[in-house]
Image (cartoon, rainbow, N blue to C red; front, side, top):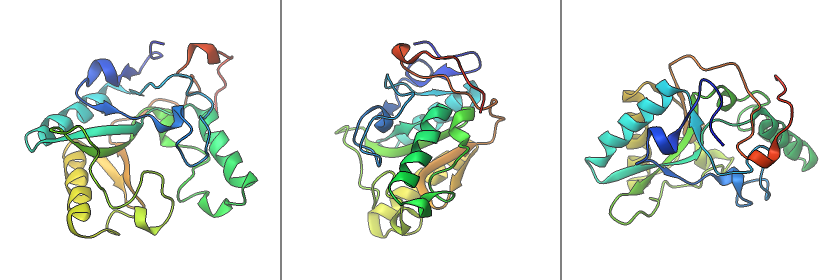
Length: 196
């Protein structure tokens, strides 16, 4: 599906950025695809997408590339994450790791990692995406993994993205986001859009 007004597709706007949209599949912390991810899309605001493309170009000079795990997130997916945490006795995740109101729904927040441009393989970042514990904190790694986390953070910050220190992969762009939306990626998920 085409992105809604105010959003652009990363496939079109930043085609060199690799997509690995985990919430479209079952290999995420909930163990199931999330509502709103009927297709593996990635949308951002134009300013955020252009900044991400610029970070990709900078990193490519070093043989590195970006992989996006999540970009715009429908609010129904955030609600499903909260419901999962509550149903599985994981309330400690709420707030620090699982937000009731996510910046992802505004189109200026993105979850990213690094890949090798030569091999196309993801690089070891010293902890998995969505590992909700101390190992996810940006400085809670050592050696090459810490160097990669800091290199990723520097490239993103140089393009106006602010890091979230509890999640090495999470960045919010400084441009204004849009009002939170609940537009699903998949055409088969159409439902009246609800404002959060």
